[in-house]
Length: 445
Image 1: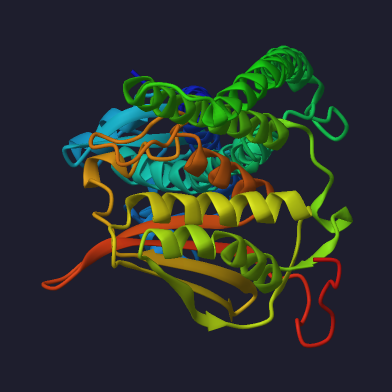
Image 2: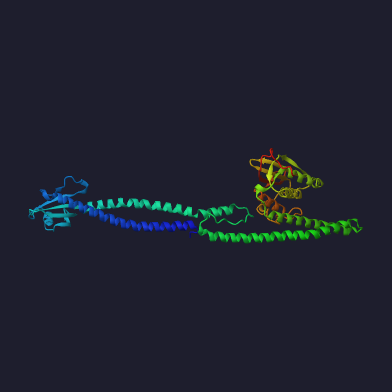
């Protein structure tokens, strides 16, 4: 069963063209064959009119006529005489007749002169049929050549007619996941308007649902952050209170749990912010990616030092991108937080910021266990922490990073580092380079 609309149209129209062409060829062949026969009869009549005044002794070819036509003039005389075939011809009436001579059928035209003598102009029917078929086939050649031309034109017309639909599908495929702007009706065929209106209605409903979900997440995280902060302050106030050691251990566990909850709420708020509508990339400020990365590394150095992790730069080049400051900071911090969480004590985290063609590259390598190959396809899903979760993360960090990178028109790749003496994960973020960093770098970082 053919599921392609283009295939159905082409096969249907091709079948119509072939069927119509076959019927037309049959009628044209019959018509051309009959016309060729009539033309040959008229030739016999003209030759007979020329021979009215001449006389011939016995049957012989007519001089001046092509040999391939095999036309004969037969003098029959005033009375039946000669061979039996000539006597049989003499007994026929004047006019065009079908007879037999020398064992083969002929088309013969008999005429009587004014003096009473008779003659015949004859031609074998086999020669006539061959000539008529040849003329009919020559008549059919243009029609036969027209059929494949019509099929080619049909294919081109179908492809051109369906091009707006293909272009529409390509535009939808090329869109970002958060681009829910309506499809334009201008410049599209009117037959597609109901389809486009239906898609636009669906996009509007999806946008409304996403807005509701984003507001719910943001409102819930904001409302929960206040009581969690208050509980954290109360827990800190208990440090100065003389309580039993067992209660102090429980208090430490409580404070740790509240800290994780507070981190989760902050990640939810960050995710809600990244889901909010964003200005076009050309309208965003120009920022130094290397400067933003240096600031985040400086903030996390004390934490890395406490864990005995060597956090530093392997390569730093001035590169500029267009982005909101909070977006770059969130992206770099989440990547480094993940690396710090999985890197064991005495491990290394190497950061690189450099230019690669027309892209600004941020690369972070750690010496942690890496990510299971089966988890790489799902690692950017919200709340997915992998089959072997490490640390106390919420599973939102990489999802937020991926969202930021998509909105900035970049790409992110994860690659496990394997070797005999080490393991780890390499994260490579590529963002469109804004300008030559040696000429213009934002000083607002």
